[in-house]
Length: 409
Image (spheres, rainbow, N blue to C red):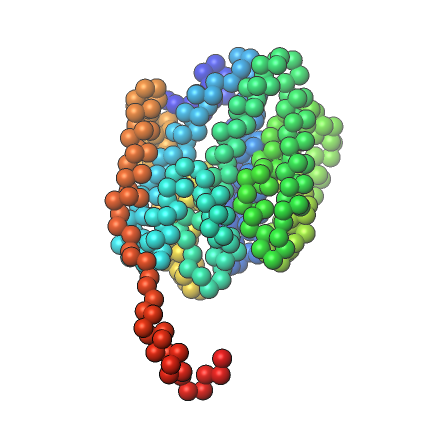
């Protein structure tokens, strides 16, 4: 069975509350995209903080045991964990959109697909000036635009382990301390960039840019280090109260924040939310008996967290294709379809490849990866794109010569 952790690294006791946090995060995103929770997009920050925490905890334990980080093994585990479900969703969605979507949707899908595959779709969308917040306006949504956050995480997975390996090469003593300092300084630098680059009219650049969103991942990484854990341990007698306070603060933000109209989010608000999320994660690990941690360990919330990755992948294409004008009936139907597809993806694609597919490891795994990437690349090329819309200049000339009665422009 393929394990998440490297060979020789003891499996850490499972934390049910962290599964619950994933469940809460994806629920917030679903309600946000359903237009029922204005601040639900902050669930993405909770995902980021969780990713930063879990990955850094794993890497630091590997350094403690082996003195280094096996980058090939790490990236191999990430590929087995993330790529099968992503590739399945990309292929199915592209074919469905090509079959039933509008010409414009087909064009943007085939244009965005290669950038999703390259884990650079956030920068592609920024280069095309595709506003994150336009998805709720009159323009036609792009079925892959939600994958900007997956791209940010993948870019983090590429750089952060290599940086930790470099730190480990400098000596195994006080690695956690050096990582904590670097994560803290880099988080502040990312915040400064966000404040410097924010556009109050459309904050898409700082919301989806890797450099300006890195602090959400880095704050989670910082909390995974020994100095941060020691600091949290000092509130041992008040953990329950602190956890409850953080939970209430995060929940209040999700209820009241309105993304594009809350400029303060991009001058420190998102940073504060990410820090609160990271601290909540760390405290849930240290105080699993706290009331909030017990609630998060409730089985339905945990199950939602277990399928959260596939649910995040599938929900937006389903929302776009099934319910462009959402009432509550269309929303319930879209949610049901999304959850069903996510469960199928989890149990038929994710888990078999991650845990049981011997061919997905080693040289055969490399061949499978190359073949899958070539197949996806071929998909974007072979699916015929509709011809660009044309403008009949003759009609424009006739309209100018014979203006419509009553037109005073």
